[in-house]
Image (cartoon, rainbow, N blue to C red; front, top):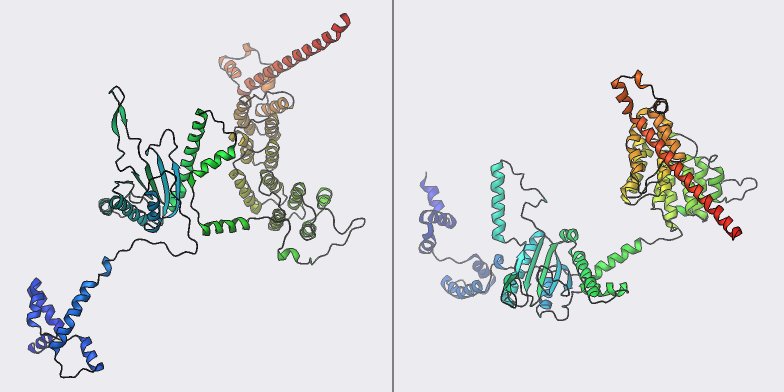
Length: 631
């Protein structure tokens, strides 16, 4: 029962070879040729039926004929896994212009640039000539720096390693590659990282997109074209005394900055080194006594040291982007040419087209939203003149028009959006502080102010903050008035603080509005909190804002709201005999009594100073009038 399957198994060639290989081990290959008879390949049998060969030809003759051909074929072929091709650029219709070696540069610069582009496969190659830096850079004297972009982190390290070996093989130059991670070092770091993750009991050390000490994104290859290393050596002066350490200033130092695209845009090394070169040239010209009056010529001289990458396809894309940002003073949109479904009958004594300025100024309180929509549609289609004042008046009218139903807020926002789009198409400036303040003021003062308008208000305030510029005093006053109407004290104080963020002094009008607004609330807590930080800042302004005129009145009103008995206690204090020790100390340390006393003293001093100045001016005028008569 068992012998028959065993005999069948041994009859199969592959099964017999497997058994022999398992039993004999490494000697199975030699034993195979001793036990297996010479057999003809499968292709030979096929060729037998298709050719004119006679069937009585022996297999031995065919084996002898095919053996030399197979040997020569094995010798000429190379395995696919040993074929290694350098990275190549993808075929493109636009071939970028490579930078050329500057005058007096080493002979290897031009072939090096070609190798960086053709064999290393790096893009956007730029060259910066820094040989005129004085003092020279820390990288070396007579510096020529190149910048190139790699496609990925792996491409960066592979191409940088090949570049170092290419310099060593062809020019006998020992280059130093800072940031290069070789294959052995990469394996060691990965092994240590896995070991650390295993000890911590998790595998969260390898974060996607993280650094982990493996990815650098930047390899700096630097070498000296003179053929020797630029290591620091001890230097001696003319008398033979030791003077310090330093590197030789002979030869040319070449630095190739290889970066990934994201790393290159993040560091922006070209702008950094161009600024260093500009400052060095300015300082050198000042030392030589040369005046750089022609700024354009000086910038042209600086730009001549920098060879930026010239890519026609990128230039074409930039030109398309600039063309898409062009503005026109007329509209070709189809919605502008649609006929109006509703026609407005001409009013008595008025034409069919009513000027937009007249609509806003005269009928802002009487216009409803539907009528404003017709006016804006007429403004878009008939070409009525539009300026900045008319645009702001129309925006205010849209937010203040009837009906005052909460569901009309979306329609008002859409109408304002159409107005801004029309103004932008006509070449007007809609991205400005004045326009944003007008929009915020109109939104806050709208009778349909609700959650939808609050979201729009938050977006507009975010845009205003992102402009990173100080508001004018009238703009701050308008925002404070709008926020005070809704009792939004947080935004009111934020608008009040906005000039100080840009180191702009606040005037007495801002402080007067702050004090009067707080006094109008009749809330002692709000007035107390405001006085404790607004009043000290008022005295610390450059120059100090002193309490005179209407500012004194508003400040005193705010103090009396915070402490109604402050004025009475200041002018008519109780007798000290009627108070005990605690009561006398409490009266002396009463906060707003002391503040009111300080304000009164400042005002009295200012009034006295102003009276003496006016008296002196009157005496001077009188003496000038009397002196000619006496003469």
